[in-house]
Amino acid sequence: MKQFFVFAIFTLFVIFFAGVLQINEVIAQVPPEQSNKAKSPTNSDKKAFVLLELFTSEGCPTCPPADANLAFLEKEQPFVQAEIITLALHVDYWNSLSWKDQYSSPMFSRRQQIYSLAMKIDSNYTPQMIVDGRTQFIGNNMAKAHKAITEAAKIQKATIEIAPTADKYKIKISDIPAHGNATVFLVITEDNLPSSHKNGENSSKRPEHISVVRELKSLGFLTAEQKDLELETILQIQTAWKTENLKLVVFVQENGSRKVLGVGRIKV
Image (tube, rainbow, N blue to C red; front, top):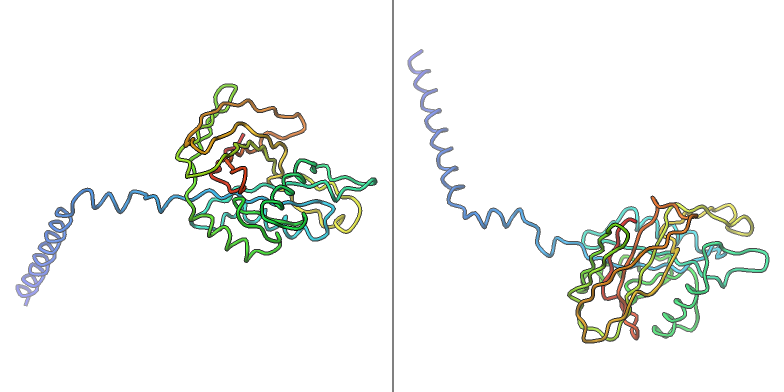
């Protein structure tokens, strides 16, 4: 009986060892390039950068939910194929003689008006979201935001590289898709800003301020024939801004259609 038991154990060991040898032979026959292909990221694995602009105001009673939507999309980044770059532009037409949104600027109202003309909208309104300069909708509508961002992520865009040096930022724009005359914009945004609204309907809501635009300016221009461009710029940071909360955004936008051709971002 003891001999039979030893024989059975020996037989199982031989079968197991033979199976291991067969598995190793199969693995050895797999070409190296096939194994590496499964591990290496492909173009489809890379996230597309999508620009999301919110035109808002602390004086707008329906804006706090849109501000919250913007903060959610910025912080959570819920899309597999898209990296959302957000801008909160506070317009000035809600301001009154007794109160002013401290983050507002007539420049942002003008930018929104240019969008209205390009998209054939009767007038400016808040809260308004615009995705990649192509699609606009009420900022409280997350279903439309989801659809617009998903579609924008499928569109080919330029590659924008931003590299800090000792006292400058070098910007390299390449592989720009077919386009008309375009402008390169630079934006500085700041997070975690307090609400300044002490009166009115929004006084108790204290909306969270994320990606508030502190500066918006043009860096240069592209003709329809240009496919790449290199620039350098020096940032002018105001003392009231907290550097740890600042981000630098660079994007290229067609002058006529207002379509965004590429966008990039780094922390300051």
